[in-house]
Image (tube, rainbow, N blue to C red; front, top):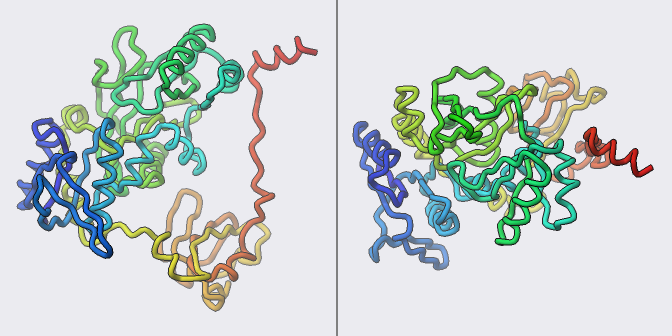
Amino acid sequence: MKLAILSRGPKSYSTRRLKEAALARGYDAKVLNTLKFAIDLDQGSPDLYFRQKQLSHYDAVLPRIGASITYYGTSVVRQFEEMDVFCANTANGISNSRDKLRSLQILSRHHIGIPRTTFVNDKKDVLPAIERVGGAPVVIKLIEGTQGIGVLLAESIKAAESIIELLQSQKQDVLIQKFVAESKGKDIRAFVVGDRVVAAMRRVAQGQEFRSNVHRGGVAEPVELSKEYVETAVRSAQILGLRVAGVDMLESDAGPQVMEVNSSPGLEGIETCTNLDIAGAIVEYIAARVDFPEIDVRQRLTVSSGYGVSEIHVPKDSEFDGMTITETKLRDSDVNVLTLYRGETEIPNPKDSRTLQAHDRLLCFGKLDSMRGLLAPKSQRRRRPKVKSLSQSAIDKVGK
C-alpha cells in the first residue's frame, strides 16, 4: 500500500507516528503538504499535481487538515475521492465536523445526546436564547475553534451579553450552550477508528480553568468506557461521515453529551496516556479498507430514474410485525432491504428469513413508487414541546 499523509507539519508528533506506523508495517508512506497541491479538472479526468509535477499513484490518503485551511484542504481530499482513491476521512465528513453548529444540527437530528444549544444573530434574541438553554452560567463558543480556543464560560447573563456583543461586533458567529455543571472541568475523548473505539481518556482541567483540553493544561487519565459511551462515540463519527475521529463527550446525569467531533485528532496526549499504538490501529484499518473507496450513493442514483434509498419504519400495529422479510413481499415490489436497525443494533444485509418486530427500521433501496405508501406520514413527526426554565416562567407570571 502506498499511503499519502496530508499534513503541513511533518515533524509534529501525530504525523511522525503515523508515518512510522506505516513504514513499520512495510507500507510506503509519504507526508505531503496540503497547500502544495494543484487541482486540475477536465472532462472525465480529474487530476492532481504536487509541486508542479503530476501526482503519482496512491492507494490511500489520510487527511490531517488544519482548521485554517479547511476549504482548500477539503477540496484536495474531494479530488482524491473523485480519482477513486480511498480517503480515511471524506471531504464531506471533515466539513461537517469543522463547523460546530453544522455538526450539532446533524447529531441532533439523529438523536445523539448533545448539550442544549442555541444560535442567534439578532441582539434582541440573546436573552431569550440564554433562558431557553437554562440560564446562566452558559458556555459561549466560536463556531470554528480548536484546542479550547474560542470557548468561554459566562457566569452571569450580563457577562454573557457582553461577551456575545463583543464577538458579534468582530463578525464572529457564536453558539450559546447549556453549562453541564456535573461535568465541570472534565470530559471524555474517545478515539474512533472505523466501527470501534480504540482508546479513551478522561481529561481533567487544572486550577480555575474549566476547559479540560490537554493544550490548556488539562491532565489526562485512561478510562474504560461503558457500552453507552462507546456506541455514542462510534455513531457520532459515522453520522458525520468520519472513519477516524476524536469524539469529545461530557459525562452528564442524562448520559453522554457530545460536545465536538474532531476529524484530525491529535495522537500525543492519548497515546502517552493509554500507552496504546493508536497510529498503528489507524494504518491497519486503512490497509484493510483500501480496496473500498467512498461511493457517493446520491450521485450514483441520479441515473436510476424512479429509484432511491429510504427508511421504512415498522410501527406497533404494522402488518409487517411478526413477518419475515420474504413474507413482506418487498422484493416482489422491487424493494431491497439493505440494513435493519433494531434499537441500537444494526443488522447489515439481513437474511430473507429474518422476522421483523415493531419499531424496527429498514433502510431500503428500490422503486420510489413502491416505497412511498410505506413511509410514515410527515404529520406524525411532531416537534418536542419546549419546557420553560423557572426564570422564564417567573417572567411570564410577572407579565400577567
